[in-house]
Image 1: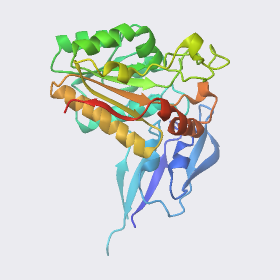
Image 2: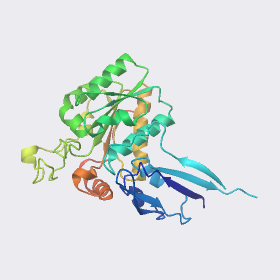
Image 3: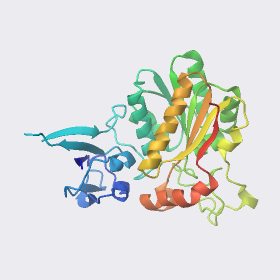
Image 4: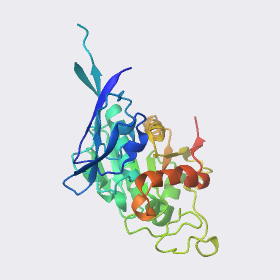
Length: 75
Length: 247
């Protein structure tokens, strides 16, 4: 299974939590942080279950999520 | 270990944050239009026309040419731009108060003339910007600030189904209704808008895509619940899918 990670742009996140409802592996959760506009933002849990499916990023209204695929190099 | 970026904010969006409420469908539609512009490499070729309403600041968010029009007159301005610059791709972006109420005359005549433009119609069943008043598209028994006991057909009439209204007109070539409540529906909406743009590039004629969008602030709901309301209730009144496709 491919591995991935997401990076959340906290200045763009408005805390609608649609990404949490879309994530199939429950890798995103509500954080305790507040951004400069006073919105509660989400955070990436990084449990190693993310498979870079991009569902969270596609459904994010504010384009606040970047998705990376992690490619392990063969030795 | 290498990291390969597979999804990022489209380049056709500026760094200015959207002025929309959290979870608003306008933001999603802005994003997918910007993605299509990037994918089809249209940034120097496309001209949008922004409406009056929540999306009035659309020209701040898109990194391509956007004009502004008086309330409801977006299709008329888009017609003018398309006739003067026929090699450009022109789209009109409108909300339901703008298109179905004050701009009803403009949209019907533009459609009837079969102007070669694409109209993107955001239907959130109320006047979002001014505080959630009753719009022509408000559902029966839906409570708004100007129908506090719910819309009843005797006083306010029935919700206007714009696509069904326009479909008999001969100038109209492509009509589709989509929603943007989850990742799958966002992809479908993107394909529909892309098809509208492609038809315009092939000089096929007038196309309109209606997007059922949530308005969490005025519906007094959490964004996820508001999306659920679209999935369960609103699609029964405004059925999804192609209403007309000439091809």
